[in-house]
Length: 94
Image (cartoon, rainbow, N blue to C red; front, side, top):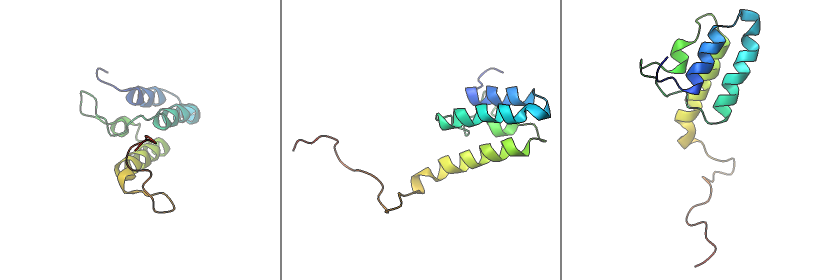
């Protein structure tokens, strides 16, 4: 479909697989998410990847929902020590 991201295309690919092969397709979606694919991005039909998942594939839908939640909550998550990471310039000079 026009305007699909690689994540949309991966979901469409998994939808075209028979149920026993969904596990292999799921790993493609997870790889794209790990590489920074944004599950919140909509295509030209205004659908997010989660919107086009085969309704019978609850596991894939859950993966995309968790990824979307993680991205939305990302700014609220702190490191274990409560530090948001380094601030200021990366330069050692004064």
